[in-house]
Image (cartoon, rainbow, N blue to C red):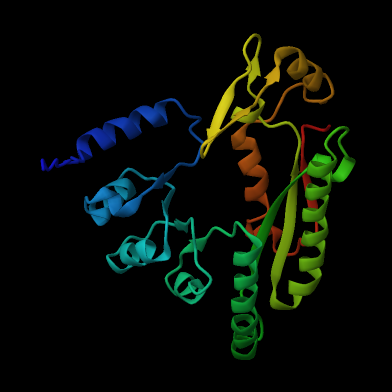
Length: 260
């Protein structure tokens, strides 16, 4: 039986050149996150991360808490997002100043179970708990309704109800809970087409996406700013609710829709 081997070579020089090219195509104010995936596929994740720090990457991201922990222990100080935190990870995440991506109700529940005793201990020790922030993502479909999209609108409205309820429940722990309701944002789901309808692959399924240019023009006419929002502007709306200046804002829904 023949045995085949695959060798992966990681070139720091090419990494720097590719990153320089990428930055040249972006708005200078755009923040960049680099995913250090699967321990850099056998390369030294610390060396890759250290080089990314030298190149002034704004964020690093790893799949699991253990990967972020390994980088912290070797001296990587950049912000590190953990994309798939597990329910027992929160003590480690907080101790090593990692940032969890809370992407499901299961992880949110795990966070809440960690939060209560931690906040109570901080209040007993310091008189006040550290300010922590949750920003949920909703849609103007949830605030205004959307014809022919009953399920989607109902789901986004539920996010708003969840946001306002958690703001009341978690206020005692000095956690602010807000949401951003987005209007039309330029993504691959809303890309324009004139002839064939674009498709994307999710798992083993194909989905049609996009809007005809006629639909896009009609949407733009309903927006006072006259255009769709960019992904940078969408990220900026979330960022506003993470700033220290928003420490006394909770239970609110920020609409990011160009005035629509």
